[in-house]
Each structure stands twice: as structure tokens, then as C-alpha cells.
Image 1 (spheres, one colour):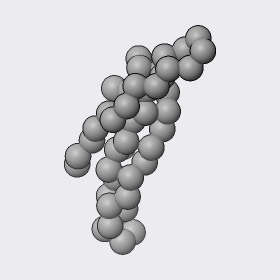
Image 2 (tube, helix red, strand yellow):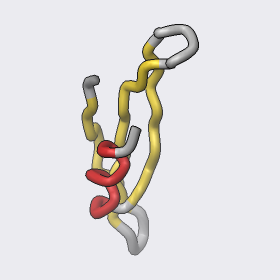
Image 3 (tube, one colour):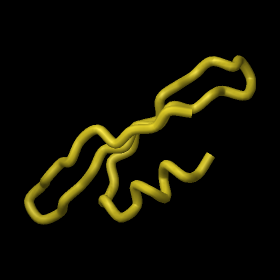
Image 4 (spheres, helix red, strand yellow):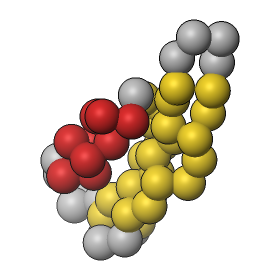
Length: 50
């Protein structure tokens, strides 16, 4: 399963990262991309969960 953090985003007071993870659908077998914007400390947690 491929996974990648693609961008660092900055707002007025917080530093944010956008994480994109490729997930395989158990029903069809097709791959989809799940995107989420979060604080950098939570990125590893997001990529580790299935």
C-alpha cells in the first residue's frame, strides 16, 4: 500500500500537513485515495491505521 505526505500548509497560527493515503476497497478491490489535513504530529498515526 502506497502512502505519501504531499504538502505542508500554514495558516495564521497553526502549521498543518495534508496527508494522502491509498486504500484498497475490500468490496471491489479498487484503490481509492483518502485525504486529510491535520497537525504534523498526527500524520504518522493517520498513515498507520487501516
